[in-house]
Length: 216
Image (cartoon, rainbow, N blue to C red; front, side):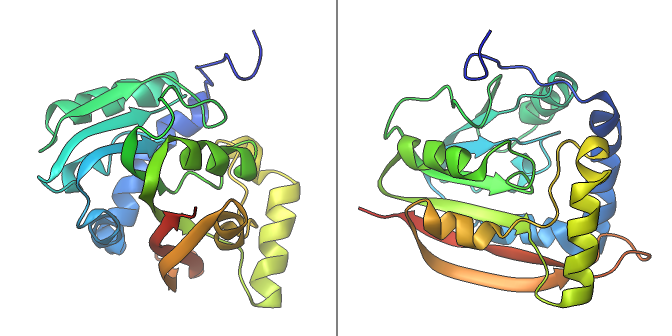
C-alpha cells in the first residue's frame, strides 16, 4: 500500500491523551478560539484531522455538511460519536492529508485546527486543501506555530528534533504554518497571532487564527 492509499495512521498514545488535552485547552480559552474560527461558515465544509471532534459543536447552522477526514482509528471513533450530537450534519471518514478523499473544487470551506503541525508534509496537505476548495473558497485555520523569540524558538526546535513528534502524534512545534499557507497559494484575509497557555504550567505558545482565500 502506498502512502497516498493509506487511510489509517494509528498512534495509540496520542489518541489516549488528545481528548484530555483538548478539554484542558478548552477550560483555558480554546473553546472560544474554535468558535471564532468557524463563525460565518456556510455550505459544505471539509475539516482536516478533527481528532475527537472537539470542533463539531461550534459549527453554525448555515453549514449544510461537514466532511471530517481523520486518519487515526481510535480518534475517528470518538469523532463519529461527537458527530451524532453535532448541530449540523457531520460525516467522519478515513483518509490522510496527502490524499483527501474529496473531489476537486467540491467544498465551500476547509478547516485546519491544530493539525498542520502534524501532517507529514505541509505543502502537500495545503495543496490538497486548495485542490478541494471551490474558487474563492476559504481556509479557516487555528494552529500553534514557531515562536519569534529566540529562547522559546530554540526550545521548540530542540523538542521537534528529539522526542516531541514521537510522543505527540508527529507534532512539529517549530513549523512556520502562516508562511506555509501563503506559500501554498492562499491569500491571507485575516490573521490574529497570540500567545496561548493550554495549562497553567506551560509557557504561552504562539498561535495563529484566521482565514485565507484560495488564490486564482
